Image: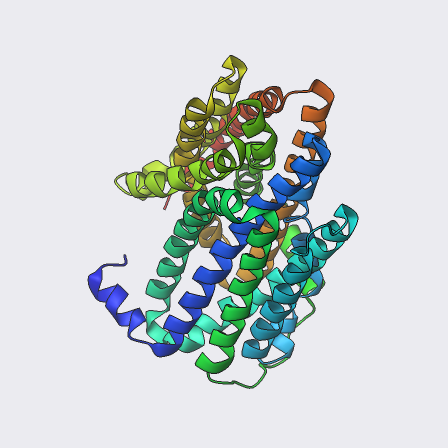
Length: 398
């Protein structure tokens, strides 16, 4: 647990402060860009399908990059990998910010920019143990808390910044955050040599898939995680839904912030339950995550939608327990392989869910209807997963 002593201990390490500051800049900047792109595409096209597809482009490239490029963090010095990844994203965001850039070029630049995220994250994650040593667990906890807080700040502030600076100004601001992050990392971290070579990333992903497939508990835990395919749909449709209720760009930020805000609260509240209870309740918590989205059948206004998304986000904190249980059940020597498979699949599921939600919104003419349908489908599948999890949960309880 990260208390005052733990926080003071990790922040007393100068290199950790550098990594933490860079993470804050990148996380807030990323969410700012997501808001700006959603608004930009919806303003130019008026299409929910195009808006959601563009949002999906912020996720799907990570699937390819996660398989092919994360190995860069083991082949080259990790500081170099992070600095180059941030510099590339800073330049690409600056080009995307030029007024009047054609949407196809914006989409292409976005894909390339997102390809840089997995190697950056892999290098950062691999460097943390070297920087912190026996303080690693406390530092990892701080990073997780910071990430959720960054999502919240970026989404809330994103709508306001877009309304104030416009989409081009917001994209340029995101580019500046990456440039600042690159400078912090370049001059704030000690250069370390590249680590020893390891098996190719795609080999590790295949091994992880085989491991998960052999264990029913792991299969169900991965399935419970991939239910985010349905609950991520409101994110991709935030701009068209906000337009439907007359809330504009500021409404987009509030809608996107509701889920991470709820998840922060849910994470705190669930800690009051014993771990064994949380594990047994995983299925029901997954149902409770999707069920609030069914409330969109009643055509909520902005306030009602934010409330529904916050409730969904609070229950989605089950993902923390699901992930921890997954890690505990996987043999130590195979955890990297299994986690690589699970995380790549989660990214793909979220991208597919957002794109499918956009197509459904376009076909029905209503983002509200598409979100409600996603909630119904997610609830039904979560109920099926709950039934299956009830049978294997006793063997997964610590």
